[in-house]
Length: 326
Ligand code: FO1
Image 1 (tube, rainbow, N blue to C red):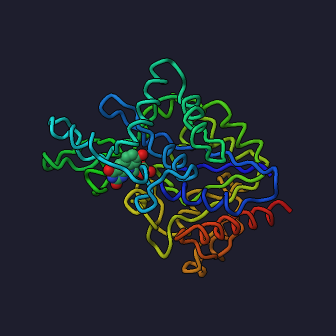
Image 2 (image 1 turned 90 degrees about the horizontal axis):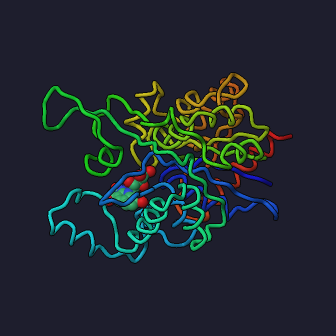
């Protein structure tokens, strides 16, 4: 069975660890299309949070509690940089994590595309999936907020500053800079078209899934794939499980609910992206309304608390896909 997953953030990575544990029949393969619009240049290094979170989570190097960065991390370089007074000091780059960015930046500077760099880094981590960046081109999410230093004025900040330094204040708009000129990385469109199952995990619908779909060609591949396309709600009982989707969904006119995100993605039979949608049991009352959108729907426990619950969510996703394929 060929499974392809669009992934961003900690939720996507945790879902993937469940999927690997709930591994379908042997000879199955998992391709992951990673969001790269969170990526940022820091101290001359290219940092790719959503690629690294998948690589570390599935490769066994992740700090479980944070969900990002390395386990057993130290922060000496970060402290030394701060001692020199260089900015930013608000982004936590650990000593072990820095090695990843040094290798990545060295390879990018040598002319390797990000997809080749990611393959090289994964050779060490052996994540057990094929991790492909959504594009080799530069795409960066910026968020327009009220300028904290100039009342009445607005300014755009990089997503990482919006999230990590400013803790997701009121946002007026989100833009994926460079998306229009970006091209899907080698293998991305094929991984979507050739899949038996395509999964939209509980990643942020705007700045993880939305940015992947903003790369020209990717949304069309999702709409036309012969795979069963199943999504997992990132919103439970009206709130995101993690992160700031509640601040960003209104910017794409989506309600902050399992039903609202289903409406946002839409049913493929009506020109949207999904065939099926999983909601948490807390949202079981919405199943009929989701079905009215033209989607198959199930209410199952969706909290990715630990490996066992993550595996159960993944198994439920595969079960719904299997129903859809019949
Ligand atoms: N998230 C934080 O909330 N604080 C941090 O200092 C931080 C550092 C960091 C370093 C490397 C990395 O790969 C991720 C990091 N993240 C941090 C998480 C990151 O902002 C988010 O995981 C994604 O960008 C959201 O999908």
